[in-house]
Image 1 (spheres, helix red, strand yellow):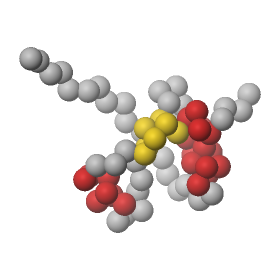
Image 2 (cartoon, rainbow, N blue to C red):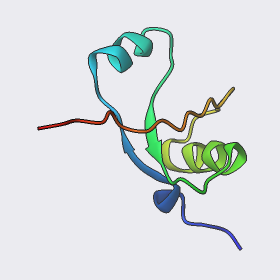
Image 3 (tube, rainbow, N blue to C red):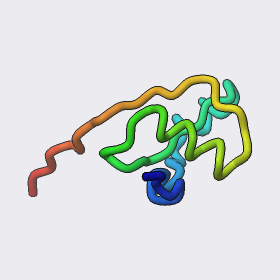
Length: 67
């Protein structure tokens, strides 16, 4: 069953750090937690019509904040 590419790619992450990565032609997106690298690559190619060379993934928890 083929997933919709827009269900896999949630949104681009726009921060100072990701803007500096843009110079190296690296882009950062928030993706579905259950998506694998192949699904992410196919979704990006379908949405943006580009050739994806490599996909790096990171699962990171948010910082714990106290009040």
